[in-house]
Amino acid sequence: MSHGNQDPFRMGFLTAVEDAERGFVGGLLVTNRFGRPLEFQCTAPVKPNRAQQILYGPTLRPFVLGELLGRTLLDKLGVKPHLVLMDSDEVLDLRQHVPMAVAYLTDKLVDETMQLALGKHAITFHPDFPADRTDIARHTKAIPGDADLREPFERVREALVETLRLGTARTA
Image (cartoon, rainbow, N blue to C red):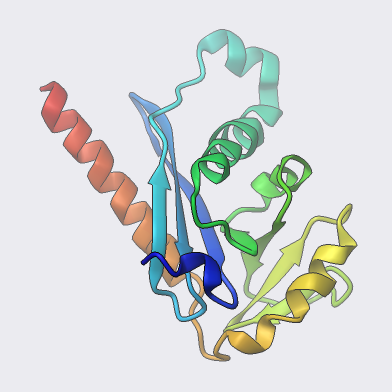
């Protein structure tokens, strides 16, 4: 797997799971254009305290998922993706803190100025970074038209749940 940085196009799949007792755990899987894993990173659980929940209000979840977990994961990566995909639009502001294109996965192409068709889906970019759409459009032919880009998120969530399960077993 040492050839990860030479792949023509790499995608990162960033998601998180929430555990009622331990908080949020984020995971980032970097794949080649065929969905084969090149690198995986996950965070330790992050549980906002009650004061943070009150003070951050509705901005807490995007802050924790994007700035805390997402940026931490991207900083740790050895194999950097060209595009970071997320399964939630509430993390899109991560783009303001990282140097690579960030987009969230949707099922419909409704705004061709901020979206691209990719695999069986559409991706939506941050409105403050219109050049991201142009940069990534050059690579879309590398992704098979029948690619299910939701499937890697399932792998990440499964790995995170397993990590939480193993963490619980060790502390019991």
